[in-house]
Every structure is written in structure tokens, then in C-alpha cells.
Length: 452
Image (cartoon, rainbow, N blue to C red; front, side):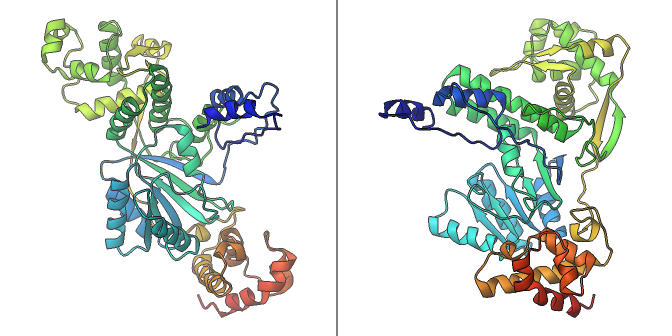
């Protein structure tokens, strides 16, 4: 449909001024938009992609459902969104959270318009704690106090992921974006790309984007830097101290021996195979294909027979993400060595893998640990929740969305500063004269009544 807009514009008696907007455009997409719309002399404005208040993490765990239920329980005073790739998974996660006693809604294309409208309104009004949804949810919702976005599966590309994750923390307060990765996600996406996209050229583009998403999931360097570089934005820093890689949520393990075995297997087979064949060779699997090609005679054959298939394929993905290996695009990706791999084989460099500690953090409300301006107060958590409930009652009485009274950032600062006069209240960032007059006394009374 988008491709037809240019033709339609050209059919008009007089071409109007045209503006095109997108949330997460790479240079490739930008050029595509200009070409399709005939914007030969376009002025391009890029406002920047970095969201410093968002903490990004990738968790590789086979027990995704357990993780989700545990995480939501430990963040029971916070609003979140859980994105799933399919309607079936939305329903499964929704049912599990409902059984766990969570105030949860669900949203996907298989529900009626009425049900979806009810769910969206209930979530916007803070009557639901969590929304489980496909990517159909989020574009039309203006909810500033989403404190976390979990992705139950890996999205197909970085553009989709960054848009969906970016629905967290729109009020500027700290928020978490967690992607739960499974190797099965890759196979599902490849199948869908092959089935839904007819032209080989477009398939290659989508597979290249998918590989970038896989690289993100196995990136051992700063995740925020990786994303910003993907969108063509350079960074002056090496670490952000606000992602799972920079915070060091795992142990560094020397895997130089495993790396050398994999690299030699790739080199010994003239860089003609993908991850599955290389994994079979280093594990010593005597398949018909390996025996016919004589690869069982390679010095590295069976060198990693004590390592399971999943772990070896995970290492290969990490070596691609770290730049030691290249993976070709297309239906059957082929691995090849880079200069970095040659340094390892020459004994000039060692390779480390980050092995994650997959555990749910102990419950710490962001209102008790960190405010939007870095202040902390051990007694603020209970007061923040008290003020949140007070805001909810005011919103219900006035028929408003709670965030329209005050965003979470204001409540966090009120909980930490505990103003006792209208003058002190008015000094809180985000409290204007009109809202001070309308809600100031009410919130001062709520603070005074709090006995925590």
C-alpha cells in the first residue's frame, strides 16, 4: 500500500507538500521512503534514538514462562507489556498470569473489536497491571507509566524491537526492556520469511535484518551501542552501564579451545557450510553426508564431542555477533572466517563467552531505589504506592487517565521529597501552576496521612 502513495501523488493535478515520518528508520529505509514518495530534495530531520532511562537485557532461557510469571509477580506494583509473536502464545501467557492472580489483559487480532477496546481502556486506566499482546497493541495507546516491556520471543528485526521496547518509560523514569531468546525463534522467523515473501531480493533483506537481531541477542558488548550503531547513530562511550552486557550479569568463561575447533572446522571445509554441519563435525557425528565428504578425517572431528549441540550453535552465534565469523545471507547461510578468527588461530588472541545467571531480581520498586534524577530513599516505596492509589481514585472520580493527573516521575519525587507546603510541592519537576492549584492540597493531605 505504501508503494502506491507515490503513484497517487503523481496523479494529482498539483503535487502537495509531503512529509513522511517514521520512528526507527535506518539509512536504507530513509532512502526507500524518499524514492517511493519522490522526495528528491527532502529535508531530513533525525532527532536521535537513545533512550537513557531504558535498561536493555537479553535473557537466554528455555523456561520463558516461568521467568515471565516470576518477574511479573516481583513487579506487582508496576505496569508492563508482554509482547508475543503469535495469538496462541498471547493466550498461553495470559492464562498462566491469570492463574497466578495477576490483573492481566490480552490483545490480538483474534479478539473482537469490543473486547480489544475494553482491554485497552482498562489498561490505560490502571485497572490492569499487565497487557499480553501481539505487535498489534501499542501504536494507539498513550500510556506514560509503562515500567517494563518483556518480549516473550525475539522479534524479526531491530526496527520492530526498538519501537515495541520504546513503549516503556515514556515518562522519563527508569524502565526495563527484556528480550527472552530461544533458538527456536530463529527457525520460526526464517520459515515465515520464506513463506510470506515471494521475491528473493526481499527475502535476502529480511534475512539480513533477522541476522542483525540474532547478533543483538548474542552481543557481549554494549547493547545500547549496538542498537544506536544499527540505526546509524555513533556513540562516544564504550559502555552504558545500563544493559545486561555492561552490567556484567554473567561470568566470563574462556572458550578459546572451542573457538579454535570451530574455526578450524570452517577452514578445513573451505568455508562451504553453515552452523549445523560445523556443529556435527566438531561433535564427531558420523552422518552419511560427513562420511561421504570425508570430513571424519579432519583433525578437529569429534574435538568437542563432550559439548552438546545447542551449546555449540550458541557459541557460533556469539562468534558471528562478536565479529569472529561472517554468516552469509540467504536461505542457507554459510560461515566464513574474519581477521579476528585468524588472530585466534594464530595464538594472538583469546576468546571469552559471557554465561548468564538467569534469575529474577529481588523485588525492588524503582520508586525506592532510583528516581528519575538519581535520588534514593529507603522509605519511599510504600509512599509511592500510596500516592499511586490516591491518583487512581482521583482519576476514576474525574473520568481521566491516571497519568493525566501526574506521571510516575512526579509521584516518585513526591515520595522522596515529601513536601509539606504548596511552595515545596510546586518545586517538584512536572508540577505546573494549574495542577498545583487543582491537586496540590489533595496530595499534601495524602502524604500527611501516610503512616509508613
